Image (tube, rainbow, N blue to C red; front, side):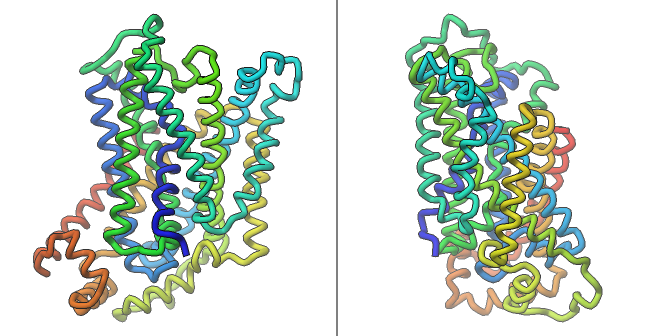
Length: 453
Protein backbone atom coordinates (compact mmCIF):
# COMPACT_ATOMS: atom_id res chain seq x y z
CA UNK A 1 0.00 0.00 0.00
CA UNK A 2 1.33 3.42 -0.86
CA UNK A 3 2.24 5.72 1.97
CA UNK A 4 0.18 8.80 2.59
CA UNK A 5 2.94 11.22 1.59
CA UNK A 6 3.91 9.54 -1.69
CA UNK A 7 1.31 11.14 -4.00
CA UNK A 8 2.44 14.73 -3.50
CA UNK A 9 6.01 14.17 -4.80
CA UNK A 10 4.62 12.28 -7.80
CA UNK A 11 2.19 15.05 -8.68
CA UNK A 12 4.76 17.75 -7.95
CA UNK A 13 7.30 16.10 -10.22
CA UNK A 14 4.80 15.65 -13.02
CA UNK A 15 3.37 19.17 -12.72
CA UNK A 16 6.72 20.87 -12.23
CA UNK A 17 8.33 19.48 -15.35
CA UNK A 18 10.71 21.03 -17.82
CA UNK A 19 7.89 23.42 -18.79
CA UNK A 20 8.97 25.70 -15.94
CA UNK A 21 11.95 26.72 -18.10
CA UNK A 22 9.67 28.18 -20.79
CA UNK A 23 7.48 30.24 -18.45
CA UNK A 24 9.65 33.40 -18.73
CA UNK A 25 9.22 33.35 -22.54
CA UNK A 26 5.45 33.04 -22.15
CA UNK A 27 5.51 36.03 -19.82
CA UNK A 28 7.50 38.08 -22.33
CA UNK A 29 4.84 37.52 -24.99
CA UNK A 30 1.87 38.22 -22.75
CA UNK A 31 3.28 40.94 -20.51
CA UNK A 32 3.73 40.50 -16.77
CA UNK A 33 0.16 41.39 -15.73
CA UNK A 34 -1.64 39.19 -18.26
CA UNK A 35 1.00 36.46 -18.06
CA UNK A 36 0.68 36.04 -14.30
CA UNK A 37 -3.11 36.00 -14.66
CA UNK A 38 -2.95 33.27 -17.31
CA UNK A 39 -0.55 31.18 -15.20
CA UNK A 40 -2.91 31.38 -12.22
CA UNK A 41 -5.98 30.70 -14.38
CA UNK A 42 -4.34 27.69 -16.02
CA UNK A 43 -3.49 26.33 -12.57
CA UNK A 44 -7.06 26.80 -11.34
CA UNK A 45 -8.62 25.07 -14.35
CA UNK A 46 -6.10 22.22 -14.21
CA UNK A 47 -6.72 21.84 -10.48
CA UNK A 48 -10.48 21.77 -11.07
CA UNK A 49 -9.96 18.97 -13.58
CA UNK A 50 -8.01 17.00 -10.97
CA UNK A 51 -10.75 17.66 -8.41
CA UNK A 52 -13.39 16.31 -10.81
CA UNK A 53 -11.29 13.19 -11.21
CA UNK A 54 -11.34 12.62 -7.44
CA UNK A 55 -15.12 13.12 -7.44
CA UNK A 56 -15.64 10.75 -10.37
CA UNK A 57 -13.46 8.09 -8.73
CA UNK A 58 -16.04 7.81 -5.92
CA UNK A 59 -18.34 5.99 -8.36
CA UNK A 60 -15.78 3.22 -8.70
CA UNK A 61 -14.48 0.73 -6.20
CA UNK A 62 -11.16 1.63 -4.64
CA UNK A 63 -8.21 0.50 -6.74
CA UNK A 64 -10.14 0.33 -10.02
CA UNK A 65 -10.19 4.02 -10.99
CA UNK A 66 -9.08 4.84 -14.53
CA UNK A 67 -10.19 6.79 -17.56
CA UNK A 68 -11.18 3.48 -19.15
CA UNK A 69 -13.31 2.40 -16.19
CA UNK A 70 -15.15 5.73 -16.18
CA UNK A 71 -15.68 5.63 -19.93
CA UNK A 72 -17.29 2.19 -19.55
CA UNK A 73 -19.89 3.77 -17.27
CA UNK A 74 -20.39 6.92 -19.32
CA UNK A 75 -19.35 6.62 -22.99
CA UNK A 76 -18.47 2.92 -23.47
CA UNK A 77 -18.20 3.05 -27.26
CA UNK A 78 -15.85 6.06 -27.08
CA UNK A 79 -13.47 4.47 -24.57
CA UNK A 80 -11.00 3.50 -27.28
CA UNK A 81 -10.81 7.13 -28.46
CA UNK A 82 -10.12 8.44 -24.95
CA UNK A 83 -7.41 5.92 -24.18
CA UNK A 84 -5.81 6.31 -27.60
CA UNK A 85 -5.49 10.06 -27.01
CA UNK A 86 -3.89 9.46 -23.62
CA UNK A 87 -1.48 6.86 -25.03
CA UNK A 88 -0.39 9.09 -27.93
CA UNK A 89 0.07 12.10 -25.65
CA UNK A 90 2.16 10.21 -23.08
CA UNK A 91 4.21 8.52 -25.80
CA UNK A 92 4.95 11.86 -27.47
CA UNK A 93 6.01 13.50 -24.21
CA UNK A 94 8.23 10.52 -23.37
CA UNK A 95 9.95 10.83 -26.75
CA UNK A 96 10.49 14.54 -26.18
CA UNK A 97 12.25 13.74 -22.90
CA UNK A 98 14.69 11.44 -24.69
CA UNK A 99 15.33 14.12 -27.31
CA UNK A 100 16.04 16.68 -24.57
CA UNK A 101 18.58 14.31 -23.03
CA UNK A 102 20.28 13.83 -26.39
CA UNK A 103 20.40 17.56 -27.03
CA UNK A 104 21.70 18.63 -23.61
CA UNK A 105 24.22 15.97 -22.62
CA UNK A 106 26.92 16.91 -25.17
CA UNK A 107 26.88 20.44 -23.74
CA UNK A 108 26.96 19.14 -20.19
CA UNK A 109 30.03 17.03 -20.95
CA UNK A 110 31.78 19.95 -22.65
CA UNK A 111 30.93 22.14 -19.67
CA UNK A 112 32.62 19.77 -17.24
CA UNK A 113 35.58 18.99 -19.51
CA UNK A 114 36.95 21.20 -22.28
CA UNK A 115 38.70 18.20 -23.82
CA UNK A 116 35.46 16.26 -24.24
CA UNK A 117 35.00 17.65 -27.73
CA UNK A 118 37.93 15.55 -28.89
CA UNK A 119 36.06 12.34 -28.06
CA UNK A 120 33.46 12.03 -30.81
CA UNK A 121 30.99 9.71 -29.08
CA UNK A 122 30.76 11.97 -26.00
CA UNK A 123 29.27 14.71 -28.18
CA UNK A 124 27.00 12.35 -30.12
CA UNK A 125 23.36 12.72 -29.06
CA UNK A 126 22.59 9.13 -30.07
CA UNK A 127 25.17 7.83 -27.60
CA UNK A 128 23.50 9.66 -24.73
CA UNK A 129 19.98 8.66 -25.74
CA UNK A 130 21.14 5.03 -25.76
CA UNK A 131 22.98 5.38 -22.46
CA UNK A 132 20.09 6.93 -20.59
CA UNK A 133 17.66 4.40 -22.04
CA UNK A 134 19.59 1.76 -20.12
CA UNK A 135 18.81 3.71 -16.94
CA UNK A 136 15.09 4.28 -17.55
CA UNK A 137 14.34 0.75 -18.79
CA UNK A 138 14.24 -0.89 -15.31
CA UNK A 139 12.30 2.09 -13.92
CA UNK A 140 9.74 1.74 -16.72
CA UNK A 141 9.02 -1.87 -15.76
CA UNK A 142 7.86 -0.94 -12.24
CA UNK A 143 4.15 -1.60 -11.86
CA UNK A 144 3.30 1.00 -9.22
CA UNK A 145 3.93 4.73 -9.09
CA UNK A 146 4.87 4.62 -5.41
CA UNK A 147 7.88 2.52 -6.44
CA UNK A 148 9.20 5.73 -8.03
CA UNK A 149 8.86 7.89 -4.93
CA UNK A 150 12.62 8.07 -4.36
CA UNK A 151 13.34 9.04 -7.96
CA UNK A 152 10.59 11.64 -7.63
CA UNK A 153 12.43 13.19 -4.69
CA UNK A 154 15.64 13.35 -6.79
CA UNK A 155 13.71 15.01 -9.62
CA UNK A 156 12.24 17.57 -7.21
CA UNK A 157 15.75 18.37 -5.98
CA UNK A 158 16.70 19.04 -9.60
CA UNK A 159 13.72 21.37 -10.00
CA UNK A 160 14.67 23.16 -6.78
CA UNK A 161 18.19 23.74 -8.09
CA UNK A 162 16.85 25.20 -11.34
CA UNK A 163 14.57 27.58 -9.42
CA UNK A 164 17.44 28.68 -7.17
CA UNK A 165 19.69 29.16 -10.23
CA UNK A 166 17.17 31.49 -11.91
CA UNK A 167 16.60 33.51 -8.74
CA UNK A 168 20.35 33.76 -8.00
CA UNK A 169 21.13 35.19 -11.43
CA UNK A 170 18.29 37.69 -11.01
CA UNK A 171 19.54 38.80 -7.60
CA UNK A 172 23.15 39.07 -8.80
CA UNK A 173 22.02 41.13 -11.82
CA UNK A 174 24.69 39.51 -14.00
CA UNK A 175 22.42 39.47 -17.07
CA UNK A 176 21.36 43.11 -17.07
CA UNK A 177 23.76 44.14 -19.84
CA UNK A 178 21.93 41.82 -22.28
CA UNK A 179 18.43 42.58 -21.04
CA UNK A 180 15.79 43.74 -23.49
CA UNK A 181 12.70 45.83 -22.88
CA UNK A 182 10.12 44.83 -20.27
CA UNK A 183 6.37 44.56 -20.94
CA UNK A 184 4.19 44.99 -17.89
CA UNK A 185 0.70 45.76 -19.19
CA UNK A 186 1.07 45.32 -22.96
CA UNK A 187 1.38 42.06 -24.85
CA UNK A 188 3.56 41.39 -27.89
CA UNK A 189 0.56 40.56 -30.09
CA UNK A 190 -2.64 38.54 -29.97
CA UNK A 191 -1.07 35.75 -32.03
CA UNK A 192 2.02 35.57 -29.80
CA UNK A 193 -0.16 35.50 -26.70
CA UNK A 194 -2.37 32.71 -28.02
CA UNK A 195 0.72 30.71 -29.04
CA UNK A 196 1.93 30.84 -25.42
CA UNK A 197 -1.27 29.37 -23.98
CA UNK A 198 -0.19 25.75 -24.69
CA UNK A 199 2.93 26.34 -22.58
CA UNK A 200 0.89 27.20 -19.49
CA UNK A 201 -1.71 24.50 -20.15
CA UNK A 202 0.88 21.78 -20.77
CA UNK A 203 2.84 22.88 -17.70
CA UNK A 204 0.07 21.65 -15.37
CA UNK A 205 -0.78 18.39 -17.12
CA UNK A 206 -0.47 15.57 -14.61
CA UNK A 207 -3.99 14.20 -14.95
CA UNK A 208 -2.90 10.97 -16.64
CA UNK A 209 -1.33 9.85 -13.33
CA UNK A 210 -4.10 11.04 -11.01
CA UNK A 211 -6.15 7.83 -11.05
CA UNK A 212 -3.05 5.74 -10.33
CA UNK A 213 -2.36 7.97 -7.34
CA UNK A 214 -5.94 7.59 -6.12
CA UNK A 215 -5.63 3.82 -6.45
CA UNK A 216 -2.37 3.66 -4.50
CA UNK A 217 -2.76 6.30 -1.79
CA UNK A 218 -3.44 4.68 1.58
CA UNK A 219 -5.88 7.36 2.71
CA UNK A 220 -8.06 8.23 -0.28
CA UNK A 221 -10.71 10.17 1.61
CA UNK A 222 -12.13 13.15 -0.23
CA UNK A 223 -10.45 15.61 2.12
CA UNK A 224 -7.08 13.91 1.69
CA UNK A 225 -7.22 13.74 -2.11
CA UNK A 226 -8.43 17.34 -2.34
CA UNK A 227 -5.48 18.43 -0.20
CA UNK A 228 -3.13 16.58 -2.57
CA UNK A 229 -4.62 18.50 -5.51
CA UNK A 230 -4.41 21.87 -3.76
CA UNK A 231 -0.85 21.24 -2.55
CA UNK A 232 0.40 20.16 -5.98
CA UNK A 233 -1.26 22.87 -8.04
CA UNK A 234 -0.68 25.59 -5.44
CA UNK A 235 3.04 24.85 -5.27
CA UNK A 236 3.30 24.71 -9.05
CA UNK A 237 1.53 28.06 -9.51
CA UNK A 238 3.83 29.73 -6.97
CA UNK A 239 7.02 28.36 -8.55
CA UNK A 240 5.89 29.11 -12.10
CA UNK A 241 5.14 32.72 -11.23
CA UNK A 242 8.41 33.12 -9.32
CA UNK A 243 10.54 31.68 -12.16
CA UNK A 244 8.55 33.50 -14.85
CA UNK A 245 8.94 36.94 -13.25
CA UNK A 246 12.57 36.64 -12.12
CA UNK A 247 13.61 35.01 -15.39
CA UNK A 248 11.81 37.59 -17.52
CA UNK A 249 13.20 40.51 -15.53
CA UNK A 250 16.69 39.03 -15.99
CA UNK A 251 16.60 39.06 -19.81
CA UNK A 252 13.53 41.07 -20.75
CA UNK A 253 12.23 40.49 -24.26
CA UNK A 254 15.57 38.88 -25.20
CA UNK A 255 14.54 35.76 -23.27
CA UNK A 256 14.65 32.40 -25.06
CA UNK A 257 12.61 29.22 -24.77
CA UNK A 258 15.03 27.60 -22.28
CA UNK A 259 16.21 30.13 -19.72
CA UNK A 260 19.07 27.94 -18.46
CA UNK A 261 20.58 27.94 -21.96
CA UNK A 262 20.63 31.76 -21.82
CA UNK A 263 23.19 31.96 -19.03
CA UNK A 264 26.89 32.38 -19.77
CA UNK A 265 28.89 29.12 -19.65
CA UNK A 266 29.81 28.34 -16.06
CA UNK A 267 29.80 25.50 -13.59
CA UNK A 268 26.41 26.54 -12.20
CA UNK A 269 24.73 26.69 -15.62
CA UNK A 270 26.29 23.34 -16.58
CA UNK A 271 24.90 21.80 -13.41
CA UNK A 272 21.57 23.39 -14.33
CA UNK A 273 21.59 21.61 -17.69
CA UNK A 274 22.48 18.39 -15.91
CA UNK A 275 19.56 18.98 -13.53
CA UNK A 276 17.21 19.22 -16.52
CA UNK A 277 18.55 15.89 -17.78
CA UNK A 278 17.94 14.28 -14.38
CA UNK A 279 14.45 15.79 -14.25
CA UNK A 280 13.31 14.49 -17.63
CA UNK A 281 15.05 11.14 -17.10
CA UNK A 282 12.99 10.42 -13.99
CA UNK A 283 9.86 11.87 -15.62
CA UNK A 284 10.06 9.39 -18.50
CA UNK A 285 8.79 6.38 -16.46
CA UNK A 286 5.85 8.53 -15.30
CA UNK A 287 4.82 8.75 -18.97
CA UNK A 288 5.31 5.04 -19.63
CA UNK A 289 2.99 4.08 -16.75
CA UNK A 290 -0.24 5.71 -18.09
CA UNK A 291 0.77 4.99 -21.70
CA UNK A 292 1.02 1.28 -20.93
CA UNK A 293 -2.33 1.28 -19.11
CA UNK A 294 -4.04 3.07 -21.99
CA UNK A 295 -2.55 0.77 -24.63
CA UNK A 296 -3.73 -2.22 -22.59
CA UNK A 297 -7.23 -0.73 -22.43
CA UNK A 298 -7.28 -0.12 -26.18
CA UNK A 299 -6.28 -3.74 -26.84
CA UNK A 300 -9.00 -5.01 -24.49
CA UNK A 301 -11.72 -2.73 -25.84
CA UNK A 302 -14.78 -4.28 -27.41
CA UNK A 303 -17.86 -2.40 -28.70
CA UNK A 304 -20.65 -2.21 -26.15
CA UNK A 305 -23.90 -3.98 -27.00
CA UNK A 306 -27.41 -3.43 -25.76
CA UNK A 307 -27.14 -6.56 -23.67
CA UNK A 308 -24.37 -4.82 -21.72
CA UNK A 309 -26.78 -2.10 -20.62
CA UNK A 310 -29.14 -2.40 -17.69
CA UNK A 311 -32.18 -0.34 -16.86
CA UNK A 312 -32.04 -1.26 -13.22
CA UNK A 313 -30.68 0.95 -10.46
CA UNK A 314 -27.35 -0.62 -9.53
CA UNK A 315 -25.70 -0.16 -6.19
CA UNK A 316 -22.23 1.27 -5.73
CA UNK A 317 -20.85 -2.25 -5.42
CA UNK A 318 -22.60 -3.36 -8.61
CA UNK A 319 -21.09 -0.43 -10.48
CA UNK A 320 -17.70 -1.24 -9.05
CA UNK A 321 -17.96 -4.86 -10.09
CA UNK A 322 -19.00 -3.78 -13.57
CA UNK A 323 -16.01 -1.46 -13.91
CA UNK A 324 -13.68 -4.01 -12.41
CA UNK A 325 -14.80 -6.72 -14.84
CA UNK A 326 -14.34 -4.42 -17.83
CA UNK A 327 -11.26 -2.61 -16.58
CA UNK A 328 -9.17 -4.29 -13.90
CA UNK A 329 -6.81 -2.28 -11.75
CA UNK A 330 -4.38 -0.73 -14.14
CA UNK A 331 -1.24 -1.58 -12.25
CA UNK A 332 -1.57 -5.22 -11.18
CA UNK A 333 -4.45 -6.06 -13.52
CA UNK A 334 -2.21 -6.55 -16.56
CA UNK A 335 -0.88 -10.07 -17.00
CA UNK A 336 2.87 -10.54 -16.73
CA UNK A 337 3.48 -11.43 -20.38
CA UNK A 338 1.18 -8.67 -21.62
CA UNK A 339 2.81 -6.18 -19.24
CA UNK A 340 6.29 -6.98 -20.54
CA UNK A 341 5.20 -6.96 -24.18
CA UNK A 342 3.46 -3.57 -24.01
CA UNK A 343 6.25 -1.95 -22.00
CA UNK A 344 8.92 -3.31 -24.33
CA UNK A 345 7.04 -2.05 -27.38
CA UNK A 346 6.71 1.44 -25.90
CA UNK A 347 10.41 1.54 -25.03
CA UNK A 348 11.55 0.32 -28.45
CA UNK A 349 9.30 2.69 -30.39
CA UNK A 350 10.17 5.74 -28.28
CA UNK A 351 13.89 4.92 -28.56
CA UNK A 352 13.63 4.50 -32.34
CA UNK A 353 11.84 7.84 -32.76
CA UNK A 354 14.27 9.68 -30.47
CA UNK A 355 17.24 8.26 -32.38
CA UNK A 356 15.94 9.21 -35.82
CA UNK A 357 14.23 12.55 -35.11
CA UNK A 358 16.18 15.41 -33.57
CA UNK A 359 13.27 17.85 -33.25
CA UNK A 360 9.62 17.16 -32.56
CA UNK A 361 8.49 20.73 -31.90
CA UNK A 362 5.62 20.78 -34.39
CA UNK A 363 4.50 17.24 -33.61
CA UNK A 364 4.65 17.82 -29.85
CA UNK A 365 2.84 21.13 -30.22
CA UNK A 366 0.00 19.25 -31.91
CA UNK A 367 0.07 16.35 -29.46
CA UNK A 368 0.27 18.73 -26.51
CA UNK A 369 -2.57 20.95 -27.68
CA UNK A 370 -4.85 17.98 -28.26
CA UNK A 371 -3.68 15.49 -25.63
CA UNK A 372 -3.14 17.92 -22.75
CA UNK A 373 -6.45 19.72 -23.22
CA UNK A 374 -8.28 16.40 -23.54
CA UNK A 375 -6.78 14.91 -20.39
CA UNK A 376 -6.84 18.10 -18.30
CA UNK A 377 -10.20 19.61 -19.24
CA UNK A 378 -12.40 17.72 -21.69
CA UNK A 379 -12.36 14.21 -20.22
CA UNK A 380 -12.67 15.14 -16.51
CA UNK A 381 -15.49 17.56 -17.35
CA UNK A 382 -17.43 15.19 -19.60
CA UNK A 383 -17.01 12.17 -17.32
CA UNK A 384 -18.25 13.94 -14.20
CA UNK A 385 -21.08 15.67 -16.07
CA UNK A 386 -22.32 12.33 -17.43
CA UNK A 387 -21.81 10.15 -14.39
CA UNK A 388 -23.38 12.67 -11.97
CA UNK A 389 -26.51 13.28 -14.04
CA UNK A 390 -29.54 13.55 -11.73
CA UNK A 391 -31.53 11.54 -14.29
CA UNK A 392 -29.11 8.68 -13.99
CA UNK A 393 -30.53 5.79 -11.98
CA UNK A 394 -27.02 4.87 -10.93
CA UNK A 395 -26.33 8.36 -9.61
CA UNK A 396 -29.63 8.47 -7.73
CA UNK A 397 -28.80 5.16 -6.11
CA UNK A 398 -25.35 6.33 -5.09
CA UNK A 399 -26.69 9.58 -3.64
CA UNK A 400 -29.26 7.62 -1.64
CA UNK A 401 -26.53 5.36 -0.28
CA UNK A 402 -24.48 8.41 0.71
CA UNK A 403 -27.46 9.98 2.46
CA UNK A 404 -28.20 6.72 4.30
CA UNK A 405 -24.59 6.60 5.52
CA UNK A 406 -24.39 10.23 6.68
CA UNK A 407 -24.15 9.25 10.34
CA UNK A 408 -21.37 6.70 9.99
CA UNK A 409 -19.61 7.09 6.67
CA UNK A 410 -16.14 8.62 6.52
CA UNK A 411 -16.84 9.75 2.97
CA UNK A 412 -19.95 11.63 4.11
CA UNK A 413 -18.01 13.23 6.97
CA UNK A 414 -15.32 14.30 4.51
CA UNK A 415 -17.91 15.96 2.29
CA UNK A 416 -19.50 17.66 5.29
CA UNK A 417 -16.14 19.12 6.25
CA UNK A 418 -15.53 20.35 2.71
CA UNK A 419 -19.05 21.75 2.37
CA UNK A 420 -19.14 23.21 5.85
CA UNK A 421 -21.79 20.89 7.28
CA UNK A 422 -24.50 22.01 4.83
CA UNK A 423 -28.02 20.65 4.67
CA UNK A 424 -28.96 17.91 2.17
CA UNK A 425 -30.88 20.46 0.08
CA UNK A 426 -27.95 22.84 -0.13
CA UNK A 427 -25.60 19.94 -0.81
CA UNK A 428 -27.76 18.92 -3.77
CA UNK A 429 -27.68 22.52 -5.01
CA UNK A 430 -23.89 22.58 -4.82
CA UNK A 431 -23.68 19.28 -6.65
CA UNK A 432 -25.80 20.78 -9.42
CA UNK A 433 -23.48 23.80 -9.64
CA UNK A 434 -20.46 21.50 -9.73
CA UNK A 435 -22.03 19.56 -12.58
CA UNK A 436 -22.61 22.74 -14.59
CA UNK A 437 -19.04 23.84 -13.96
CA UNK A 438 -17.78 20.46 -15.16
CA UNK A 439 -19.57 20.96 -18.47
CA UNK A 440 -18.12 24.47 -18.68
CA UNK A 441 -14.64 22.99 -18.15
CA UNK A 442 -15.15 20.53 -21.02
CA UNK A 443 -16.33 23.34 -23.32
CA UNK A 444 -13.37 25.46 -22.24
CA UNK A 445 -11.06 22.55 -23.13
CA UNK A 446 -12.50 22.37 -26.64
CA UNK A 447 -12.01 26.13 -27.08
CA UNK A 448 -8.40 25.92 -25.88
CA UNK A 449 -7.73 22.96 -28.18
CA UNK A 450 -9.03 24.85 -31.22
CA UNK A 451 -7.07 27.94 -30.20
CA UNK A 452 -3.83 25.98 -29.72
CA UNK A 453 -4.18 24.25 -33.06
